[in-house]
Picture 1 (cartoon, one colour):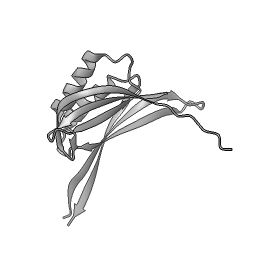
Picture 2 (spheres, chains in turn blue, red; picture 1 turned 90 degrees about the horizontal axis):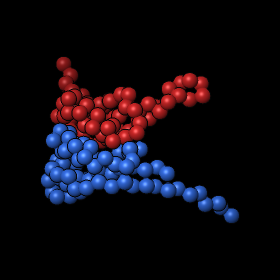
Picture 3 (cartoon, helix red, strand yellow; picture 1 turned 60 degrees about the vertical axis):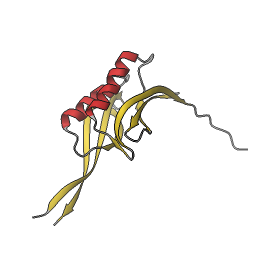
Picture 4 (cartoon, helix red, strand yellow; picture 1 turned 30 degrees about the vertical axis):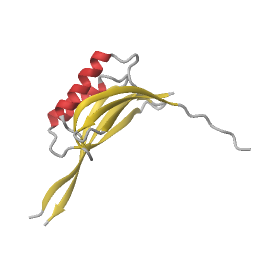
Length: 72
Length: 72
């Protein structure tokens, strides 16, 4: 099913903010992932209600499953 | 003369998803909101390419959409 890679960052208020990436390459290359997250933090192009992105928090693969339910 | 001020910026990544039955190219768009209006094209491209490096899809185009407010 549809998988997304969720990158989690901390903003200046210490709150978690995330960026989703569709159809990630699996398994995730952790070295490449670290580089990408560092790039996002250093480019500093995103803002959030709690301020700039200041540090990396974590990352996870999120999978969504959809099953239709037949109405009777 | 009227003036314009950037209110909001948006980063879009456009991916090549192959061709449809009629040979027309299919593309997929993923937008990222909350982009700083002060972000430079270099920074945007750097982040776009970093994000694309973690994906299976091929990046064909990077777009920036700005919303401007017009005033007199």
